[in-house]
Amino acid sequence: MGEQARHSGGTVAFLTLGCKVNQAESDAFAAAVPAGRVARDPAEADVIVVNTCTVTGEADHKARKAVRHALRHPQRPTVLVTGCLAALDAAGLEALGDRVIAEPDKTRVSRRVRELTGAGRMAIDDTSAVTRRSRVQLKIQDGCDAFCTYCIVPYARGVPRTVPLGEVVAQAERLAASGVAEVVLTGINIGRYDDDGMRLADVLTAVAATGIPRVRLSSIEPRDVDEHLLETAAETASFCRHLHIALQSGSDSVLRRMGRPYTSAEYLDVLDRVRAAVPGVAVSTDVIAGFPGEDEREHEESLAMVEEAGFSRLHVFRYSARAGTPAAVMPGQVAPAERARRAAELREAGARLMREMGLSWAGREAEMLVERVRGEGDAGPRVVEGTTREYLRVQAAHPAASAGDLVTVRLQAPSGPGAVPGMVESRW
Image 1 (cartoon, one colour):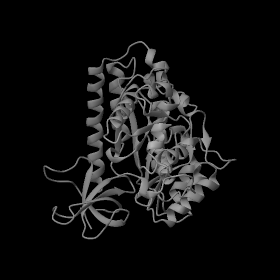
Image 2: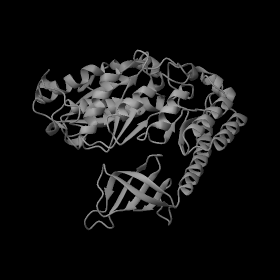
Image 3: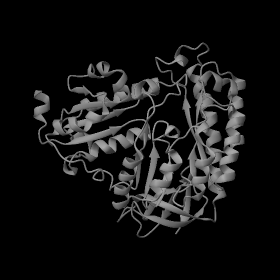
Image 4: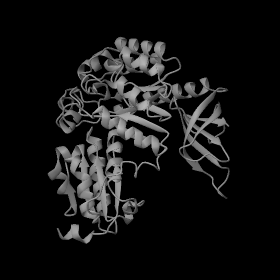
């Protein structure tokens, strides 16, 4: 209690690890705190909230490292730890230091932050922490019951739960009124959204109706890409022509060991239906390298399938055993050096596919959401960076655009030794 009282009138900083759902939740935590109490620099904060991930053993390591680092700040902050790792190992986190408080229940985090900072009771203004952001994660769902053999999330997040559509729309209306240009409908498994028969396609329609210029979907499972969703996406002008459809492996035998409910051929059939329904759509995915038992043949199958699929972007992860999952005790654990080699080959393929995506847009116009401005004043040419609806990274010299603006640019292929991989240059 003494530590908590010392921070009366204090400030808070938020450190978010892991998925977009965590980012959406951290935004909500920040929205419950008066803007003047949110510290820009964690080193100056009296309270640091660490929103953790626990999807892999490596994620656990990063979470604990972040807590230890926070404890070393000169302000001697109270470190409030929440998120998936806190749900599974609250005692272990609190053992990291006497200024660590674990809060597994995320519904209690905002109240505890107000108590620790002395902010007292207040009405939560959902827009106060997001008006400075050009893109906002809008959480519509939580939980998962897929129980893939490598994943601990169902144990940490629980069964699928849906945010009522009325609440989603109310949040979207506030975001639209505050001038947010893009919202990302996010959740642990958004394809499982079901509010009394209202599904993900209905959420897309309702959020688009609020007038937000761009609506994007976060990661979705192949089995949840149904005809109703594709028809709705094709008919919705604000829908961003980009889908992230989880793959994990292009080898059927590895998919079976992972507990994934599809084959590589079935996944490719989904891609065919997506591209037929929404012409010009970009599709990105996740792939795990070095899953237990994966041999060279299976790795080559995964590489070949990635090439055939023609993804716009590839997120590659080296398999990292998570204690408590079936995969962690499977035979045939792949050596770390071999996992790294296979991941590097997959990343090389992903980089090549991303370059091809960029080249295919050369000479065409696209809408760009400005997310960052650099080179103001005497720091060199003024350059804005951001993303197109297809999630293509773009940079352009622009004299006036600010973060959050939507501008039309003509794209060209990146050039020169300083070209950023995956970044497309443009003229406005």
